[in-house]
Length: 313
Image 1 (cartoon, rainbow, N blue to C red):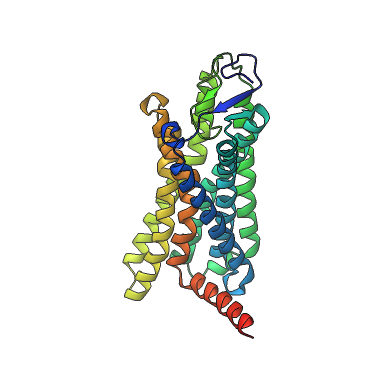
Image 2 (cartoon, rainbow, N blue to C red):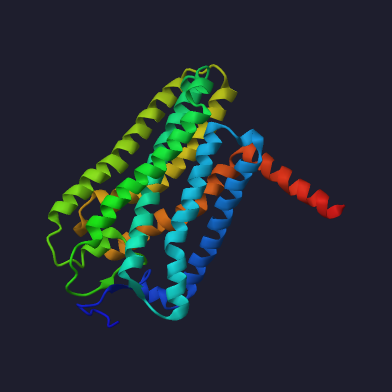
């Protein structure tokens, strides 16, 4: 396959900050982040599954977040590793389409999930007596299905539209994975209608969930301010601050990449923002939710202690 070949059937991924990428230092850091993120999310999901005390709506939704993040970072980094070690930059059109599909499935699913997690916190803090009836196991299952199903439906539309455009010129994607805006820049067809569709999809999967989250937390903070117990206020704010940190890390870059004109930011800026979404957020999520969560830390100590006892005997 020739680089820039008009009749080729694939693309070339130029990688993450090509000048620094050649030094290998950046890739080593990304690979270490991937290993820690994969392990952290896997351990968190397994802890929630194994410990019956964590079989509550908040932790069930958290386990779904861990699974999404585990899969999201695995959508991009392994291909980066293959290209780095092989010295090649090519990716077939089918593989590129698969990356687009899984990225939007997981990205859209996480947007919906973060909104539903804020609703869970709203019900727990603002209507604690009704919480067991509202957030039962059936509702949690429905929420999980909405996240995965909604993300897949969003992804199907984006993948079909993105990959059906003709590519007549350079096939060099200025990114470290097949990211939709970067691919559209290579198209020689009229993408104006699709860009309008993308704006509508972004409103549904980014702005509306974000508005729902902001509304939920306004109501939560008003409720917290009326609490008489300082301990109750501290516990409520500690729980919510973890979720707000994750929301900021995820929605911030997404708003810039997909809700602002492409001319307003460079390819390098897009790559940096995408790193936060696809690489660093999956690393930070298990740290944010575990290090500041007494139940998760207790479950982890229990497993480590049991393993230590078995080794001693």
